[in-house]
Length: 109
Image (cartoon, rainbow, N blue to C red; front, top):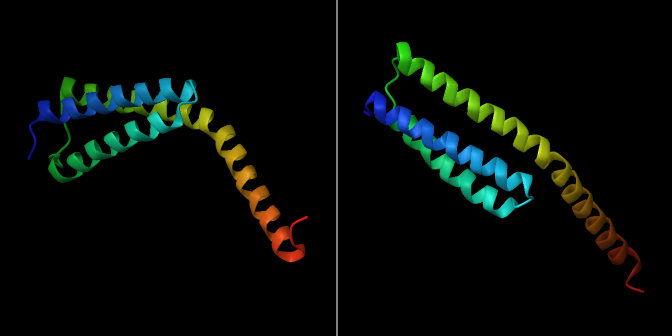
């Protein structure tokens, strides 16, 4: 079981990672964002197995809530940046699939 300070430290690390993810998303550096996302997922797995299920109290609770809010805000901004890119990628995949079906149906020119 992790101590409260260890738990808060993991949350702080996750918040810092989400801020870095946002910076990479802003610059369109999607591979770097994915690498950081995987690191963040590792922290989540650590918390799932080690965090005390009893809620924190007082200042520790307030700090945890603030870190979670910070992560959610960055996550929302990342999604706002990623959605247009995901739509472009989806359109590209769909057009490639349609092109492949046409070639299969009518042969190449």
